[in-house]
Image (cartoon, rainbow, N blue to C red; front, side, top):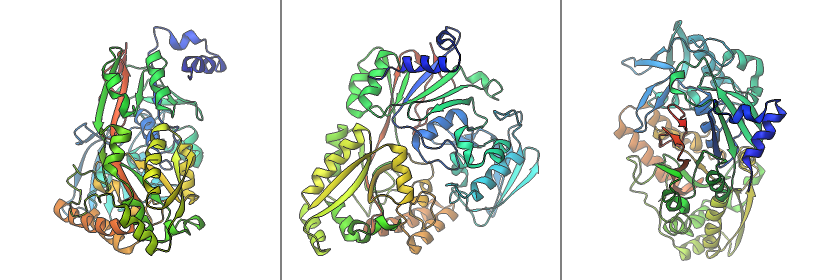
Length: 506
């Protein structure tokens, strides 16, 4: 079992600090177990779920959400739209300071938006593509002029696209900013040891400092869910995210622990490389019939029962069946091994070898072992490649994969679950699927403020995607946290983030 307390003491000694200075009664430390190690800590470049968990402590956004998914002020205190929907004016919070001591103002917002839209490495371009200009209309007021109405923009500002970096630091460090992010959140970055820990400390000049009761936060990536829970029980962790569903009952029955959950906004699935470089040139990537056969070999209900004891929600779309955006005309297909075999044979194969990379944690590996066994009955010889999560994402981006078991944590607006994955120039379109009809439908859905019109566009897109299958959706998870009984004030959010306002460690 991993001894996290020893690692923390060694880190303190390396920094020239006595261990007692960290664990003394005067300092409140929160140790959080993550399922993966985040990728680069730059909101413009990053894409990992666990990276967003760290950002929740480091980088404030223009707006945030409530547990009920209402948009609320954060760095922006208010906003208004023009009648034609082409101009958004935001009033900004005064008295906010970045971690490098620079003041947050309208010029900082303009610099951040321009960086997100123009930096070659930015993954936020498609999220902010509707913005034509960002104008400073006062020291703490900005005006966004749009090329077309964009019903998704405020929701984008509740995520990475709305995270404000120090413009001074961003200009000086460029793409290297991810090695030491400098934002304006409640905690500032101290150090990172890849695959081991990320350490933050309380920012004394935070605008909402009265709500912060922890002096230090240490994030520890521990892919093994069993080890992560054992560390919580031994006292080496105070909180962990993504408790394994089979352990829920055990945690609920432990008087030394607390349990929290929230139904997620996202999904898990298999992303298929259909046009991303040389590795897309294989039957799985080139022939939709084979992807259809693979989907038909999978029993999603059985997968949920075997791996998650029925806790999660089976799914075949980017939205769960409980969502108002779900297309009921494209229901989950029942498992049909004979039809899968027929499609495979029609494509010219009795048996076909495919490779799927899988995050190197026990839960995702078990998911894909179940899928592997099901697919074998239809003629698929599925090879599973266990891969460290950040590496898996790098290989996806580079097109060095055939299939990849990966998920998405979900967004408040439906656009956030589909546009950047399915449009030709989408910032996270790792399959490089490109269909002009899909682009038109999803862009039109962005431009309407009428939910009925938007729903019709998403429904039409879903009917095309159900045939093309660049992503085979599998299930929608429930976020589950386990906490030490010493932790108070934690609130579960559907986006899976760990917000540290009002959190205390007794």
